[in-house]
Image (cartoon, rainbow, N blue to C red; front, side, top):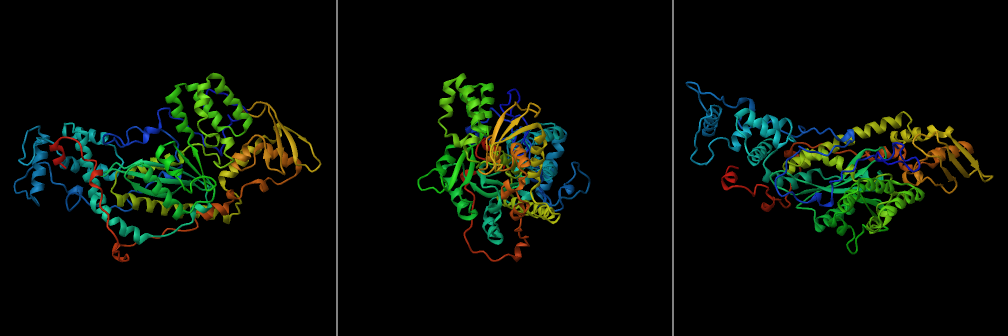
Amino acid sequence: MDDGLESYNGSAIIDPMVEQYEVNPDDGDDADEEPPEIPDDGDEEEEMNYYDHFTRLNLNAMTSDWSFTQGGPEEFPSNDFEVGQQFGNKEEVMLVVKQYNIRRAAEYKIVESDHLRLDSNVIAQHIFTMVKADPTISIRILQGGVENHFGYKASYRKVWLAKQKVIARIYGDWEESYNELPRWLFAIQMYLLAFKYCKPLISIDGTHLYGKYGGTLLMAIAQDNNANILPITFAVVEGETKEAWSFFLSYLRKHVKPQPGVLVISDRHKSIDGALNVEGSLWKPPHAFQVFCTRHIAANFMTHFKNKYLKKVLINAAYSKSHREFAHYYGRLRGENVAITNWVEKMPRSQWAQYADEGRRFGHMTTNIFKCINAVMKGSCNLPIMALVKLSYFHLGELFARKGSEALAQLQVGAEFSQTLMKAIEFNSKHVNTMNIYQFDRSRTNFMVEELAAVPGSRQQNYQVLLDERKYYCGYFQALHIPCRHMFVACSHARLDWKQFVHPMYRMESVFNVYRSEFRSIGHDDDWSSYDGPRIWPNPRMMRVKRGRAHELQDS
């Protein structure tokens, strides 16, 4: 829970099975709209904790050492002239002449261009090694490097154009990249059953492409039963429209085959809502259920009411696992401002309050598992489409191999449950001796557990535990499907094994099944099967280089 607001019944305890996220009050639903200008790619990123296993991208996995000269960047011609010096071509001579004059603050003029000093070709040669080392490097950092080297500050657009030229040299031509994509996808077609063994929920959202051609990368993200993030579906579309989301969701259901009753977590974007709830959709109950991200709800709340204290009350109400806890916080909202509760009641409680979702969230209250992937993918969203697809494929192949090996190793040493579950079990079993228990039936299934004040972060509370009905009135078990601390006390008193109350999904065998299938390695393209299908070309209207002065566009 957020600092500054007391816990109602022990929710201030840091629960290892429940995500703990900060809310950014500036994040509204309109944050996903197309930016009016070419965005800076990475100067201000929202701080969050990412899962370690998905923060290591090997961007060199499919790159070649292409450069602007045949010998590579280290063989660029010198900035000085020498008697008898020879050049390979006219462009090489012009490049040296430009650099020679720029370094000496001397003006020069090229007949074909109005630029008197730096152009994108000169900048591209200078930033080549920086971009190759880190394709995610921001334009502002590159601007600073150019200014330090040449003594002149190049415009954002000119440096952006130069970076696109470097990206094209390293990863291939932008247009040909689209044309090559169908053949590559045809060569790697395969079918994995990973999602079948994951938690029955997905987080969906989109992220902008920032390369020469714009567009939006739509993704569906799942999580295995050991808290590892797993992207299951990708699609590149022109924008976040209802039609684009309908296309994405139809293929997700057709090819990924989500479990019956799967939960979809998203923001309140109108295009997503429209696609999920269109007439005849199989993304409505009982086939699927839609819930909203608490972070986005809180951001919308701040837009309407601008009250940070009540925003925290709203978040606590959303995270409440029991009706009693929810009523406590919701009553405070109603007492402060009836208009707030009227605004909240426009959303069905099952779509934003954890206690009312019948345990479908498994503790996932936000789309932050998507945000984690988005932060990683941001480095590849300015690359040509083939580089983006290859990067995703190679990284997922490495992820499956590594996580599959880890899960198999756990099984071989006799691990029965996932490490994430065992951490939660260890946490919840610590307070068994700090509670009183009262038995109310001969069969030892009906108990009342009294929490003492000695439990850290908790008030003294009484909870009913019905073991035979699997009802525990703190709401923890219903929300997360693992034994709560009150159940541990009851099981200990009744001499029952707590393992029988654990959801089968948390068994180590289930974790291994997610990664049982393996990706195929990709050989040389000369060995691929012949492809005679359709070709793809990028939509020229999606080119980002479409604004600015005429001579800047000619400079590209």
